[in-house]
Length: 304
Image 1 (cartoon, rainbow, N blue to C red):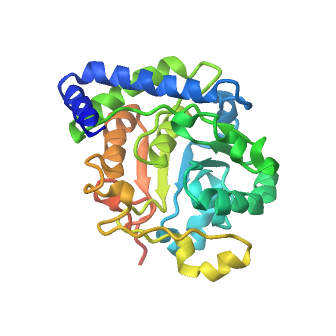
Image 2: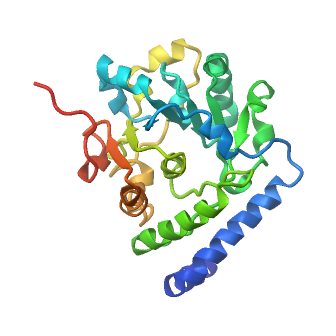
């Protein structure tokens, strides 16, 4: 396996134009294989566009910085469109869209997260939150593993991998991705590429939806502290079975260059410079605690 990976990387580094198309094709074939005969309809563009009520989208991550937002900032967030990611379900604020990467090979998800989905399901359904099931190459395969009480309300996302092996390939890959998306998103199933973290797909979707401003909240990345860790007793009193994630030295694992050369910060920077800015889309961060604040502007000016 190691020899195969080394050979693949060598080919990908030398012949990237051919490698990216082969990689996308292989990812889509795996999705097709794992989705054949499965129930559920793919997410489509009309479903996500039905949630668009403004020109601003707040993407809500689980970093602890969201605990320090002011009431005025939360009021501004509530006045725009919102998308929560993954463990956002623990927070009291109910988003318009939830994009959840519900893993299948960890004890936490079948034993805890599925239970936690049922805890919030009624209030999410009352809010008419669009529930997106993001499971990459597994396609619809694992949709059946969700609790029956919530399964029919989750819509699976067609989510192939964007092949990127090193930092220098980020910009050309995103350029190719944008061309593919422009020709594909009119089809009945909406295709959104994945790479490294759910945030990549979320920003990509926000661009496709035509938002003029995207604000990243709770996307801290330079530490492994989650908002629910600062008051676990409160969230457990609501009936949640909270996860205990392994802390990583040097920041969140998706932003740790020792784990992967291509970090989520580098991907966000590439999306901003190659996809968003050229199309007149403003990308900001909601807190200076975020690792992304080194190259993205702060949404709220300092007061006093």
